[in-house]
Image (spheres, rainbow, N blue to C red):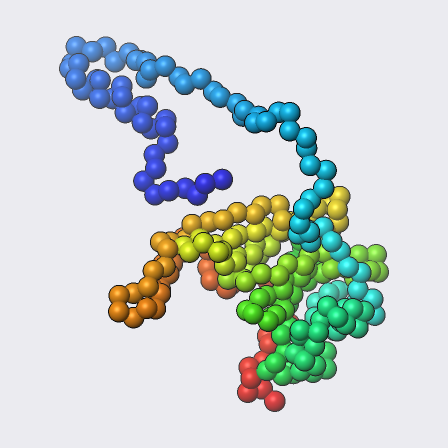
Length: 265
């Protein structure tokens, strides 16, 4: 869906402007009756192109959507994910698949003892947020993990029937992550200057996973061009209102202690 543009007027308003002008031109002798606004355009439905084309049967790229991962070896006291340190979850997954975590292995070692609240400056695991994303009445956990090359891994974990499961895994050059009700919105850098990607992840009860239910590229400002004589890019314009930088659109009801600063002991 195209974004709403400032100054755009609904067709109904333009149509009403025609009889209003006509009344002014006809003077006081007009009886004030209804007048036609002109013929109504005929509705045109979608037109199928290449109807004889053979439909594809398999996706070319593996987007990772719909994939889940059962996490073993992590206790969830009382079934409450708020009582679980996300570091313990990442370390359990690392133990099960070390090769997938070699890029952040040193950082995970700097996270300290789970639950102690003292993390080293190199710990890549951000503090968790909580929201009911699956609709079961219990809070799920949203975790961010800083990865090399300014990437951010965004994961969602749920606990049901005694099983801890990762139901979302997304890695991108993230601008910000927002919680909008039961939806996780990831804003990421686009390869077109003046645009950004926005992907909305929502839980699908059939797949039992978070799926990218809406993926779009959004205009955020004019393309960045080098400034005269400096060669440095101009500062980008602010994004449209309602899209704050780096903060969730809804405040979580509770979170664990935030990641400590590098000066923390």
